[in-house]
Length: 543
Image (cartoon, rainbow, N blue to C red; front, side, top):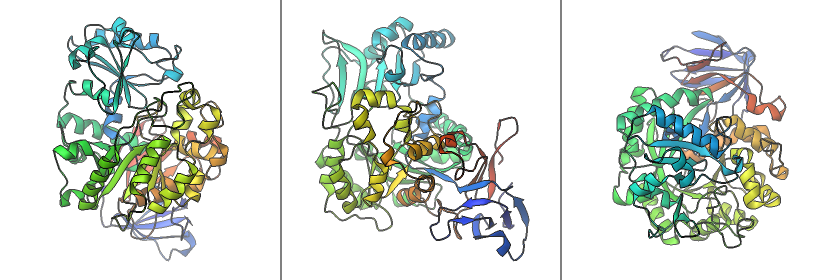
């Protein structure tokens, strides 16, 4: 269906609008890609143009993934999937590496994505020696599920120049054995030593990957996305995403560039930040710490059984302030990754009492906010800091959370209800592919986790912090729009883009335990059908 000025009328739907002034409707009229009218079907005066019967299905606004890594997600699909059901042990991983080694050219790198030592039979991360046994003469890089840690073989260490005498880089750690030799496990900024010598991909190739990902996202009802690892080199991400739209990327996209790149190669210009553009720059990104599951989050108290391990501090008050000045100058957001108590406190302490520079949205957004202290929530709310969290983490990574934090401390993480009660603006997202789940971008897994506060194995992850289904949907729609600033999306109301999805099961009626079984049957953008799930469970994309 191509876009035209013809009027479209959708009837017989169970529409949840995410608009607090008109939360429910059964019909809507779309004109020139935007909603012209929405309400109850009996109030329609007459139907002009094409009429579409929604067959009594539940309809939601198009979902917004407020913290995503689309290029990483698209690239991971081409790598060894180090998750169940393919990988259950290091031995399984070794076998997959051998299979790839036998099928590729002699000088190709071998890459894998998504291992979680908590799910591996050996209960530990793969080391250089494990990987050497599978492939010793070509470089091997296996990325942990959190994307903050990699395991590499001896060849990769050699190419990166990492030896016993290599010092830990600032904000990073090279794991070493009892003799001081690198084990092949590189944490946080240490992994960049290997990333810098890996083969560079072309702008064309990366754009094609993003275009291939678009229908996968549409199949999950995701019509607006974010890129939280925008780079200026070797390929500029704005150019890459713009080219991807020509190749078929349909999602409205906002990019956040890494501060370390912008200091060297400023790419922020006024026309690149125009939010009415499908692709635009929305902010500057820094890391305050690492991940809970990888034991690199900057925590206090230390990790369970690790009396001296408080994680890794990755930035300073001075860097945060300098990045904030740059964001203020360009009227965009400052976006800071923070998981542990100390990382969160550093951000709040740095900006507490300062006035934000944006008038239509939070000037500062904190990514993840896994372990905020109760007193910190109040101060964060007073400072106007938004939180963008990922409920899928507790669902998918429960084994390592329990190992690293213990049961009671795990239940206190991601206190969604307390965040909202404190007056903090909150949005939900996936952080895909940075979680240990075969389908990490699936929003319905995250919604189920937030509503039930149960992990995939049934473990209680903190039931006092549950939110209701409607709230969870709003945090993936209207609230996500209010934080990402992508204009005229996130609600179904007059004047907004007609971006919406049709579900096979009614998310507001079914048992919350079934939410992750929901299938998107149709996705519309600007009133156009862009995705349909057919009867034999194939993805059908219509231009």
